Image (tube, rainbow over all chains, first blue to last red; front, top):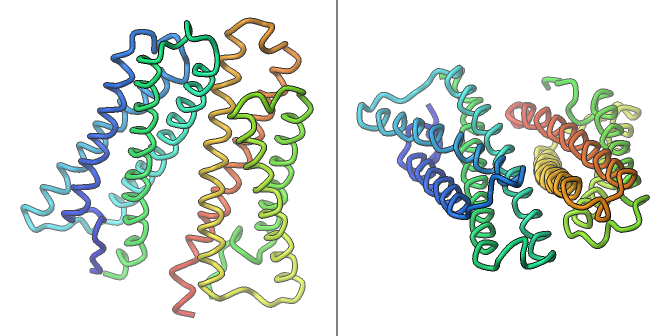
Length: 155
Length: 155
């Protein structure tokens, strides 16, 4: 069994998962502190996707921890496929959410100040940045797991 | 050498590449026919990315055609890595462009009609849909090439 740091059942993987949970949570928090986020479709989409990403990453962090503590690495390629596809789909959704939030904030900043007071708008910007970081970590997780896939069946 | 339909140097790959060229071109055309696209950052971003995707896909279509006609398949894993990374990066950029365009059109449709006359706005919507299709085909191309990668060095 080839071991790749960052793939399922390694300490680096736990770090990646906790990074995802932290960035997704802070993205939701910064978005929801603003009162008017539910009047924009893109902001609602972003909150929904982040709400999906948090339990996903948290569950996989627990799986990683269990795998390390019991010294019982996961070898089944079926589980790997589910995790890789889940990570990829979530990373695409997160990227879409982040970029639509960013483009919307950009337009709101250009438009009238009444649309978006500077204090509120900077929160939306931080939320978009956190979503981009969460996308990047999800992508890294899925790439490390993909890298391991060809060696699973020859084990 | 394992052969995967859709990977570099197959007829399916040419079809995918031409699909990408067609969808990217129509996305640019529908966007540029509207007069005011350059006043929105997201629309300019979309046009830029589509302008990058067209020459990339066209070059690779020519490489596929050359590889089929001369019956000289590409085996070098270096070339594959460049193509896979290029496809992945372009597909992320295309997804970001498509979703930011879509979220912007959604906001413009909700806002005053003077911002976005229905005839212009439906063009932007079609442009976003074409960008999403182009993203999907780029992703498919890159996944087929990734699938072939582990077999390249054992050849």
